[in-house]
Image (cartoon, rainbow, N blue to C red):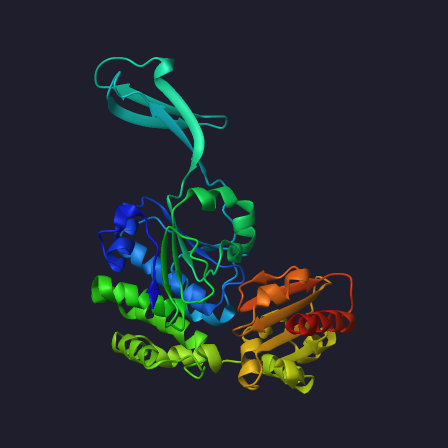
Length: 387
């Protein structure tokens, strides 16, 4: 079921036309991914970059922190992934065109100032004909991918809240928890991934837009989100879409190889230690494990080896609805990867511990405590919350 909310400006158009019309009207769109973005979010972002490139639009892709998962390096980012939005305010010169029409515009830049030169066709301008404003932004459209709420975008939203409130947002997601925060909300709760939602929109616009590279991006997101189509939410439509993408040239074998079959020996050693320490609480559908600095040292691995570990642990424990990996971070605090399946909410469960991410998966940080006390505090809180 695709649920949308759009401005009256687009109400006479169908959903794909609304999306395409908004992109065509935008002079400078911005693609925003959630904080702690996963492979599905990045794959959807890369797909939007590819689409906007075909439309010859300037492109910026941003996520708080700007960290591309190592497992996605094989895709090659089609645009730089930025971690911040500095200098987004735009200075605008308003010239009274009733007094004189512009014939030539030029500028000079020196060490201290920028000089803008305007030559009129006829007439003359005075200082009263010029007004300056700084209340607009260089981006005129936000494409928000995979965020269930504005808070999902973490530090970006906190630091630039006015920008998010004053700029039109296209919200593309598949979660039933999505809060429809955009002016255009393309939310399909029957899809398994944001990339599947995006595929359906692009297919209805023009199926030829989905070339081999874009098909590979979209299939990457779907394979990641479904654990290579092993998760319980896979539908016949999902498999049909995957077949279409493979038919369009998506490199399925390479995707599976890079996502699931390229674990280093160091990563496997670390995961083995995590499995050896795995604890469970069947009553609450909860599993968790601990990793110390010594575990990382003995395995010869770093925190990058933890990518996808929580998904794999939960796949091996089909009755688990909540999973957590506690580890000693090199910066001295205890960090926890917390994952929750519906009806549970990782952000809610981790709220007292500076949770950041999505309701499905969040990162918690606890400073000034050892890993055992952090484990006791967080697990006790989760169990009490579930009661």
